[in-house]
Amino acid sequence: MSETQKKALTFTGVLIVFWGVLGNIYLIGNAIWRLTPLAIEPIEKNMLSTWHWIVYITWCIMNAYMEGYKGFQKSFSPQLVERALYLGRNPTLGRVIFAPLFCMGLFHATKRRLIVSWCVLLGVISLIILIRMLSQPWRGIIDAGVVIGLGLGLLSILYCLFRGLTGNPIPVRNSIPELEPAKEAE
Image (cartoon, rainbow, N blue to C red; front, side, top):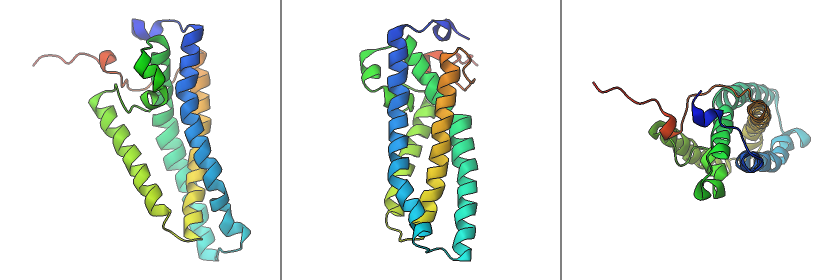
């Protein structure tokens, strides 16, 4: 652990951490809030055949694993909290103002993190546009899986935040440029 990562958080630093993380929680929570009615509409209106039910349940299980576990718990959530903790210890005005975006890795990140973060963001936006064109029950089926994945993701962010603030963060690959190990000259 580097000196930058060991530095204690001040009260202001904790507030900065919360701003960065809670800004992301708000975005995820808002998506869950908006998508849940669409996800349960096919059930409420009895639109699901046996085939639809099989797809609905399978899709929810797949999203719980792929989005909730692999995407959030193993990657995004620890990275988000690690970047928030870094920002809390090393604030700059611009990064603090845009803390939720900084924590997502959309700026001041390694080249790899920038590429991954922007591709995921643009991919999600594209999928949202495409999925809005679907009619029920298919839109509800897809949204149900997304709600499950985002719900588990939200819980994993809270878990990682708790661990990070109690001094036991989940180790992740660093995405802050100045903390990247120096590459040896060949």
